[in-house]
Length: 472
Ligand code: UD1
Ligand code: CA
Image (cartoon, rainbow, N blue to C red; front, side, top):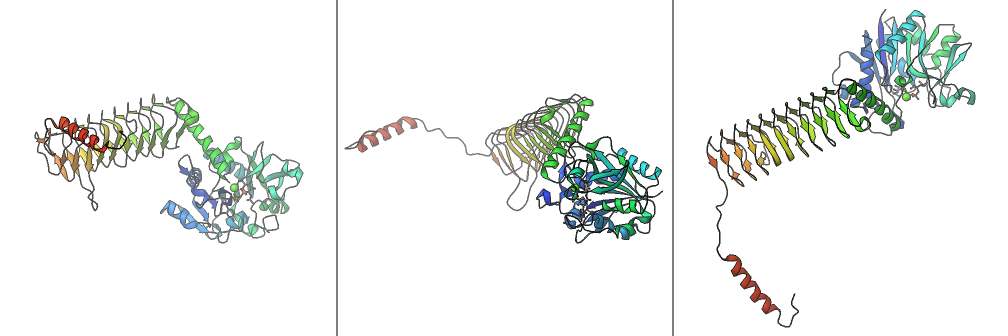
């Protein structure tokens, strides 16, 4: 039987109080809507339809082109029942089952969705509601049953005091038989506290028409946690991170303090790596085995090899670090920084679009931008590649085995040939051939007896100035 998915994401998300559409807010590095699409994809649906409305352009821009997702627009947004009706142009000609997901319910697993579909198809139901029994049902629609069977769903705002005590809630996730769906949706009214067309009202409509309505009660209620405000966003993010940390520890990663270790869902970490407290590993990052990542470090979309030590408070973005390297404390690796094997990058060193060859060292206070640096190079403290002339960026090439003395200014474009030396405090504007010493600074001059002479001059001055004045 054909299976289709519709995701509702047209609402404003008023309770977020945000300029960003709710479904673009992130949980552990992944937007809510992407998480819901991931869950949907586990069903291998024939079609997936996204109902957008509020800030539709922003949501669409987030996706770019996705031929597997059809977008329909709900304008104005008159409620969840009205929202599902907007998918009629895409789905009316189809038959089979449609699974309805909510763009703000990001934790559903494929297994739960499978169970929902199975219950629905076995019961030959017109509608199957995914429900959960929770301790704090506040804010959710309640499942009203009579003689054990669901009769209707009542929203928090419309519920009586007795109904508010019901602990079984509507997840907002359903399976529907497509055949009667759209005709029935058109009969939903808006006579409720919000004046909206409530999709849950379909349940009472079906029961009155004696159509089969089933429920599937999910065993792990956390999966249907919906995000309405920032507090729920934080709670759900916390749960997702906790789960991720458990998985990492099960895979042999040491977390000194899981409560303060922040790892995005898609991050990979090898066995025997130690993550210290207050480490942030963000989207797309891969860390090898037996590394140490010390406190205060943030790594985004970067690949770190094996046995790498990242000392405290380093920031690494869109960079790669090969096996055995040592980075930090206080290092800044910016996009396209590539550290070779066993390299050392120390405190207050910044690299951008720069390759550092195997075994090379830049241990203190340097800016290396748009540079290709060979192996066995020593970059002295205070070295600066002057890569930008105010209009364009230029390359610096430092070949194997070069020694750059401290506080050197390398004005690009510039090449330092293999094994060359740069005298400390040089300002170089011309290439240095391989094996040569480049010196670019004024020659030192020593003025003998200068200090004595200066003392004599200044003591004469103070005698003059003390006439009639107080000595200082
Ligand atoms: C809804 C259910 C409630 C359930 C809860 C579970 C209704 C009336 N209530 O309440 O029974 O317990 O979900 O989380 O359905 N949307 C649209 N167009 C609209 C209105 C909403 O696309 O016109 C989308 C929203 O963007 C959101 C989803 O539908 O993704 C749910 O809407 P929301 O306003 O969050 O409903 P709840 O009050 O949470
Ligand atoms: Ca909601």
